[in-house]
Length: 161
Image (tube, rainbow, N blue to C red):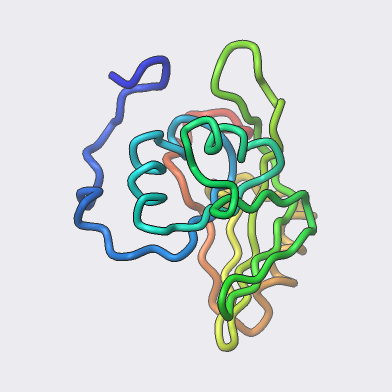
């Protein structure tokens, strides 16, 4: 068990050490199932840059991740890494890692805009879409194939998890 975070339901599909070089990781929020301390530290040691919502960078900094490897974005802010434009977008959910920090950090989705492809994700499955979310997703993904619905949500969970 990872304390105080939850126990994994499944083994990772690939061992941390077997991962290829990852230039950038986008993180939607600070729940334990989205940022694992050991994995973040291992990726940072290999040079990964982390794009995170406002406030989440403090977790990474407290784990020794260098400031130049953390990019914090508010909703609608953009950054560019190599030839990839990353736009932080609004999303519905909650944040927090303890009993006292609920919603102390931002929760966000991302539009990833490359020269030939676009991706859009909010961190959780499509059954969270409001009509406004659907319009936003369509706008980011026009004429492109987009993936959505990342995460470990189960249908039995509430519409905010």
